[in-house]
Image 1: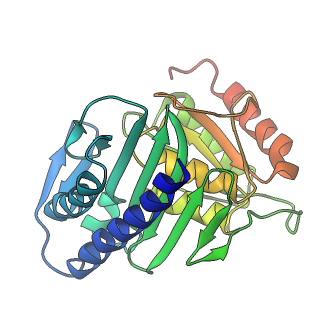
Image 2: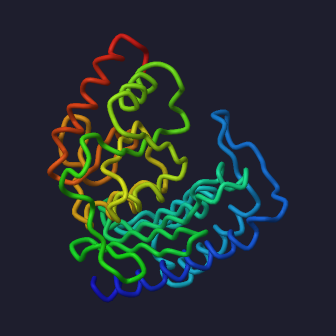
Length: 272
């Protein structure tokens, strides 16, 4: 298996960088933008070009592996190995000229993430995490923030496109904003996980947002020393189509869980 993972890491990193550089080359050009679904999501022609760049490399190197990609969906035969690909994470940012977008590629073995690659396309930072072997940015080790330099948390907020702006999610987000230093809804989840892994955030609260950008970020956070649990504090493993998660350094987990618990109680009588 190790030989396969070594090859997978090389191929995925090269694919992510190629797709990210393609997106950056088109960043200042006029973009063809289309609506995707009924939840306000978007897709651009660059999403499709970047996806083609990645899939051509993965399919050539691992023709026996199944792939689930953000735009083209499922391909290949189900087996032990599954690739998840988001070729342009942060499309809504990209479409309006906000330089916060990237690439997310995950390899799972029997539904457990074993390799995660994230590329910050605009800044050119490459993040790689391999299960049990740590996380790096541009080859340098990453460590999630520990200690308590500030009395309030700086958090990132991630929610699924299907989650509305009312009800329990809105109540929780408002509670977090009122009781933390800052809540950052970046609309580019892979980059938010990267910020946590490199120690720029105290934590992440994720409300029902799976997608093809989730699992590389989760693995990156874990391998950088953060914990990832559900809202009840149970460790998050494998895959879940409707995840509700928190992630932070171990020494701030109880604080973050209590903050989320109070926020959920505030919105308990509201629709989900």
